View 1 (cartoon, rainbow, N blue to C red):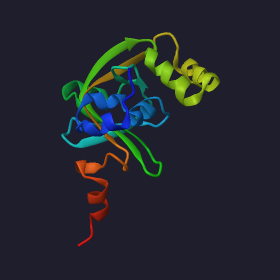
View 2 (tube, rainbow, N blue to C red):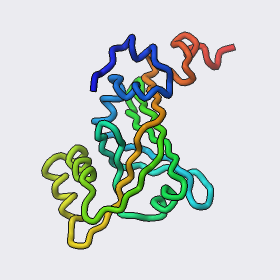
View 3 (cartoon, rainbow, N blue to C red):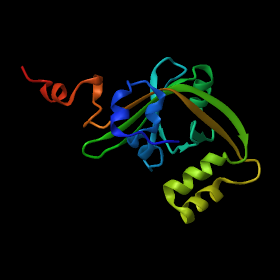
View 4 (tube, rainbow, N blue to C red):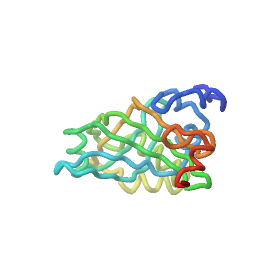
Length: 172
């Protein structure tokens, strides 16, 4: 994967999956920020759940042990994901795609990789060992981005506005 230069990033519209190669996206995809996944629950209401994630280079992979969100994702797989850093200025990666939900006997490999990244080698291994027992079953949720947005609040702003336009918002 080639990281794009600032001028290349500026020329890409929001929605272009090549934004995954931007410096902001690359930083967030290897960060320990949580992925927040938006979906529609069985009762038709929107929901968001924060989760550890692992970026494979083509998919955002989340892992869980089941629950109502899994049934909802199987029924309505369209999702939106945000990974954002509460820095000043904030950095935001927005992803849309379809959740591919797969039952896994044992531990999802990306779950173990995420645990190691978030918690470090020793604690990550301990976290995986705590749930890795005979008969363990997990669910792998893979989202392949079909739409990507990046905001850095310096060169890429909400609504595609310029920095000057963004600064004038709210002024008469």
